Image 1 (cartoon, rainbow, N blue to C red):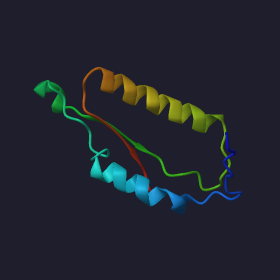
Image 2 (image 1 turned 135 degrees about the horizontal axis):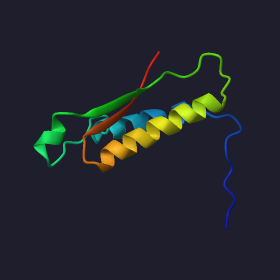
Image 3 (image 1 turned 90 degrees about the vertical axis):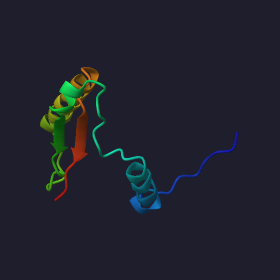
Image 4 (image 1 turned 90 degrees about the horizontal axis):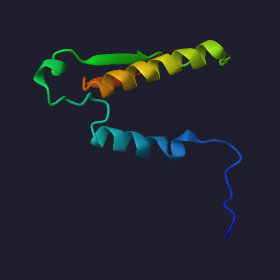
Length: 89
């Protein structure tokens, strides 16, 4: 098996444009409609806050992200259209 050499410095430009285009082409930023019309009248969305400006992460960040993930998954499992949208500065 041949070893894979990784770049020493992370360069997001190597893949972000390709991945973002894939997300846009697949309409992944739009909540999915439910088969039940009553549930479509009450979609559930959360906007993910922008990155922390200080760059210092702590347990509160982990808790916040975990709670958002739990809420989005719960509402998605109940059949409501859900959207977990990344925020911007």
